[in-house]
Length: 309
Image (cartoon, rainbow, N blue to C red; front, top):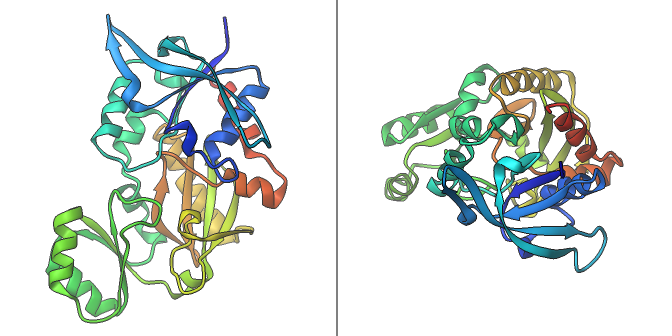
């Protein structure tokens, strides 16, 4: 039987081969003899009880300006894939949710991450299982609760529950501007509100969890004048190691994730605290880790994935 990995992601032309984790995973799959069928959520269909996509068979090339070639376009039955990787970027919206329902029709053991699991695990809400390892945190859309939290903690961070990539984050250290917050809440609904950690200026640590194991981390340092460590927001990746507290927290989260059928995740720590971002939809950072350490975690990812057969 032909070895095929189907990758549900974004447009091929939008890939940044220097920073894209999906590209690294695809290259490793190719090295292991897998043919790659690339498709977007718009390509999903259920016809005659079969989940099919109008995808592209793609060949990727390492260290080349023209880094991919579309070999052919095809109508492909996803049930025939050896594995399916869900790798499109957030936002986690109805399109994303609908795609998980399509994929629920297929044997979920070969889909990473499990579509039911990523639908049920809100990347920020799931952190409510680990409050004891987090800065003071509330979830709310109530102005009075936010104002009370600000008065107690002096400086706070407000994040949309389904936000991503460091977007739409508020840092508040003065009197609450009610009109501004009202507009924000009307746009985003319930939010995560946390006590501001001053050491966020030194960066965060992105921890990689694969098949229930903590496999490494990078430090992401914000650009000057920013609190945002995300690479997409100008953050710079640096080599790092986890201290004993950080490793303990990471292992606790890892055990919980594997129990909930999450194979690949990234979590973020600041000053020894889990800051509530548990990335399960499309974890990133593996290329930066490879550059900094010489270790290609895509190899470990595939070693563990092939054990699932």
